[in-house]
View 1 (cartoon, rainbow, N blue to C red):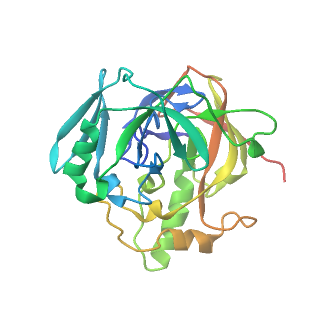
View 2: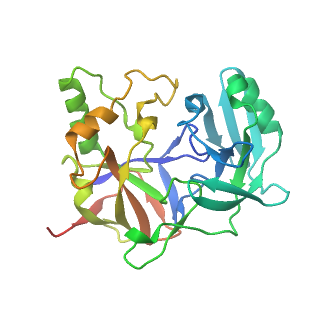
Length: 282
């Protein structure tokens, strides 16, 4: 097995960036989910509420976070920490400390997306604050993340996508690309659903080891085209995943595994890295 893709999503629920390599950190790949959009009540806003967020492109330069949209000129935000008072924001049931970016972002979002973006603001995770991962699946350990839904890494495999797409085609539907699932690490693996049986995933070089913690339950975001924000087939591929029942003991649709870093903080992870998995005993 080897790594087929590496992806980061610097701004939660905007477009991702594909990389050839990244730095592994305990909270995720470098720059992943550092920023997030919030409403007037400081609650996180994603494609669940506003599918049009999928139309906003994201780029990182040495000095700037760059947002782009066909309707407006790009917006460049310094990577240097913004000044201003800390703000308390919500991600699901977690209260996180963040720093607000310039109000220019709010004006830019409204110009790009119209009234549906009214009142949104962009915040940056305050790195002196630690957001803990739920303890139920950590086997007595601990982990933390930034603005990801709950875990620092999301791992998927090509074999599982191939199996899902075959089921979609067999049902008269169109196949979907991997970006629907917004993974951080995509593993080239021929066996469908193999990741659901892995305990750990390690670089054969010994540089890093990831522990797979919890199956990822999917929501309506996977029905949204991650470039146009269109929904080509309502309820798909959610409906097909439910029928496939990849997690028989759990309700809902599942695809991929949430993971934490066990060994290798600060090391470089690359597309093409050879991997070895430890399989859970049945």
